[in-house]
Image: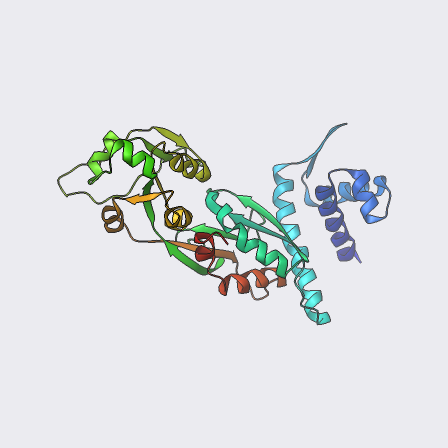
Length: 306
């Protein structure tokens, strides 16, 4: 009986965190606000830590509360998945928290197709290039660039791409087309700054062994991929962008690739991965996403703007 009471306290805690107030959580649970408050007090006493900061106007999670919420949501989701398996109903449903890189907006057409196929799954999308703690931060899955490094995660490779330099025909008509990386010093260069580190992304171009990498002008710096694409199409400079991201613009002639041979020879293709917490029991909603992306070339879909 004690274990059942403990579990109901966790359920109420999750409902309270999601609802944001005792009144809303009580209405959802069909009990009084005071009952929710007493349940939270018992849970905090049992855990030996405060889960919420309370004031007359605001209810916010503490650092310990955020960690406990992430784990609790995952445990409850696993229990729901187990109940569905035992009941023989494997229809995927519920909230699916998916982490995407900053340029992940190009994956939205494919994810829209996924939502249409699985309307009972509510996507909760988080865009960031920061190194996510998939388990600790409560993600069901993340899409990331680069090889997986966390042994706690299962992984599926979604594809690979390379980066390239592009500019508009109008810009090249005004300023000329560079034939060597050193000539970029005389051009307007549109750069990307990583949000989590503040560092400016390096343009990886092949150089002669004795030649230093060119010191490129910082004509524009931003932490947004769409902005660089827009500025490049408007003729404001040369940008270093993923090839699948600019495929449509190159195809319609609004952008032209430059220094292609130098870019291809400088570095191997980047890989794109889907990562999720490993374990013997995969929640139906995550299985649905894994299976969908296994049959969908998400980079090709992004390249063609589907």
